[in-house]
Image (cartoon, rainbow, N blue to C red; front, side, top):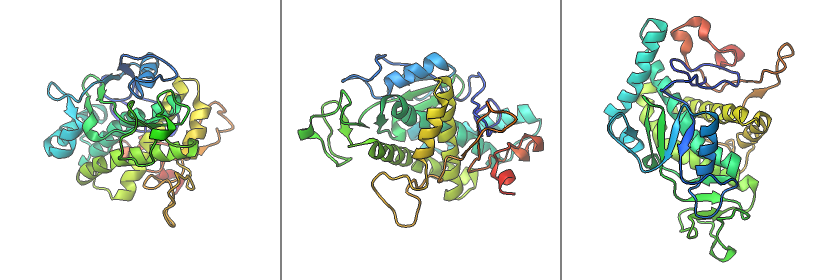
Length: 321
């Protein structure tokens, strides 16, 4: 399921069609340095690079906004009317495309995907390009679907010891809630630990979001987390292709969501990438289309309820019979 102006389907590395509705793109930030330098907003350089390649969504490093079409993360979680406003946008697009109303739960699923797809990139892209993991909460973001804009309020982040903003060893702490350094940075010892921080930060952000959408999507936690996993994977996979680094994106996503992926916190018999669905689902390119990279999705977007022939090849309803 990939973001488009009116539907969310695909098992190939495709992305949002140019539009003013969804997807991911540029930034307005003060910093363009790569690699990151001390004192700059975590992720700013990554967001700007994204904007150069895919400007359909502008990411402003700024406080959350409301009114004039903006919906803040706080409003989304606390005001049911704000959530329904977001979903109504997808319902209207579905009606325009398919000539019939979408089922309410299907429209809500589209809305969830079109929120998680770009917002996940606020976490995964800085990790991919800068080896920084922003520590964001829903209250730190806002979006305007009509113009394809996001705001993010950068703050604390996690990085590796060789990051220019890393605090001196004497001030480093393993406590996530403790003050990091003057830069807001906290270090972890290696790549595996940083990947664990990414999963944890993204899960912390998405947990209340999925809870808010659940009554509208009418799915249980396992399915909701599968939907979120698909959106997060497809977002970075798509952007990796724009960057000319699709294979690295595939490899790093496969490791990030591997069933045995470890952030140093084993959780009994559950996959260590939990609550995300285990496995990135990437498959070898088809022999008759070697340039095509496919993946098996963890969730079904239910687009077939509006148009039967629109079911994607990687849908679990197809691949699992």
